Length: 422
Ligand code: PLP
Image 1 (tube, protein in one colour):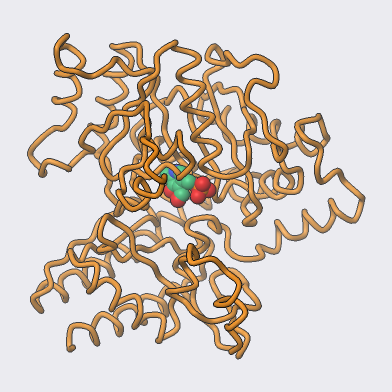
Image 2 (cartoon, rainbow, N blue to C red):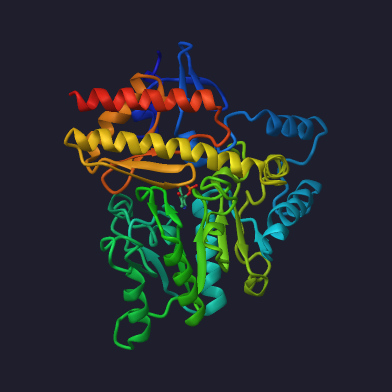
């Protein structure tokens, strides 16, 4: 395979191509094909961007139809029929059945754009600067979002410029399973000498994706919402990775029955891998002045077309979400077995997750790497997450067929077994 071009021309900053050093040519649902014709099952799925699979035929058809009528592709944030269709579908298919009332801000198309917009909105709306964020949180790498991102590797890459405006608190479970880390938050809020500037907002992932599939408990999330209400702090749920069905509901916070003031979505929002993000806000928080937060690529119409098609196809009733939950149970059971196998062979391992956002924590980044490298040799693309890369993480397309799902789990089992056997 000819890879010299990439090595010669691409910056060192590249990442995933180091784990999977082949040249891909084609992709369909959960399968990727390289230029030698070898197929791989994709448990990475664009780091959670391809919840509806590669080249989803329904979404592809919607895009082809739109392009073939010369639909507007780029229109800054001008009104288009595609945008109206998207907003109306979001309202009818997602908001109304869930009793939600949000205004929609279309910022630049990446996750970090949405997070920048969300935390700035919280500051503008509350007239306070501080944002509370949590240990192991990952919210993006532009300066504002980076300030809320825990991982030192990213934080050290600012050329020495300090990140500002965020305070870190321990996420659920960070202090061990018996400590309620929100006791600490509440104490700091009550204590005039605790040193915490009363925040404008709290940003949280209900399941931390990059941070290692750390799952916030339902009671913890409910209490976090209650604290935010008590102290007039905005609750921002960053649903960029956990949203769009990944945990088995459209929004990951639905499991806890909470209603964030602000929500960010990106990654799987377009459904087709096209760049697209939105920030949802309670209507009274919409304190933006016209054009105060802008960007050339706001509301990519083609992405709105596929996003609309995805909402209509998968979210008009609960068939899809029930199917995701069914597949999640299969993965959970198999991951538990693998964790037991590892533990019995001297590698302490635990399984965790919500819905199809699941991982096996093997404690050591080296062991996790060995498992994922073996898996790749055996035809499965799967990545790690967590502070040391110690969690083998499943982000398979939610639309994966049962055959591919079972084959991928078998490949993972073979790979774990060969690592265990040295
Ligand atoms: N927020 C969360 C929860 C994420 O998982 C990510 C990316 O992994 C981001 C924000 C940043 O998104 P992007 O990489 O599109 O900037």
